[in-house]
Figure 1 (cartoon, rainbow, N blue to C red):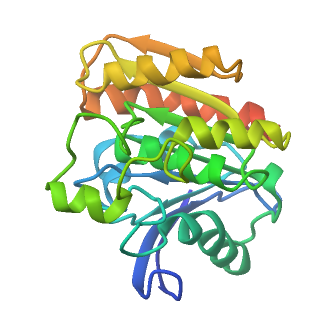
Figure 2: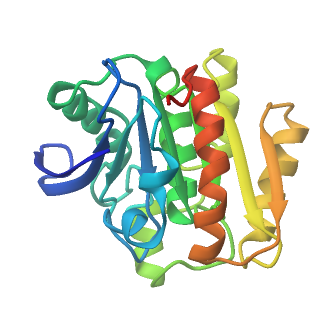
Length: 250
């Protein structure tokens, strides 16, 4: 894989921002793209620093983009930047105009951990038809209304505002809307059984089942740490590869 430290100016969030990008060093493009999101306290460098991601995607005809999501939850803040549009529309347009990438919704997938697990579903479900699949590891899936606070109370209010079950922050509402429009991406969710967010994941899994929204859900031994994510990102990669219709080469 070739590595690029990609910097660009975002008109949507109004600042310079960055992403790490891995591109295949063999095969004939244009290639599909996997957008991989970080958690609340990290940045775009973390997936390559804490996992063997580069070796896990070796041989796949796949571009991997790891953007900086700051502390945004990758949503449209009630009183702040519109990271949902930045991640769901602007960033893919930047990547597809810069790299040898395919340019349709069947060639994009997205995943992430913790805040990024929520974010991957928020972006994919909030932009129906733009992503073929979405994965969440240890996701903060009730970030808009759960009892767990992520950072100061004022920060949650700035991002999510008052809870509204039919808002653009609510993952169940977004899933129902995407299904209604027949544009539901393939969904996979996993979480460690001893993770402090296991309750949010079980709740969302049960809500999807009740709404008859298709998805994969698995629980594994583990907690909210990089040992868990380094292990289970491999299953997410295979899930996305199947959804994209690509196979490992060599």
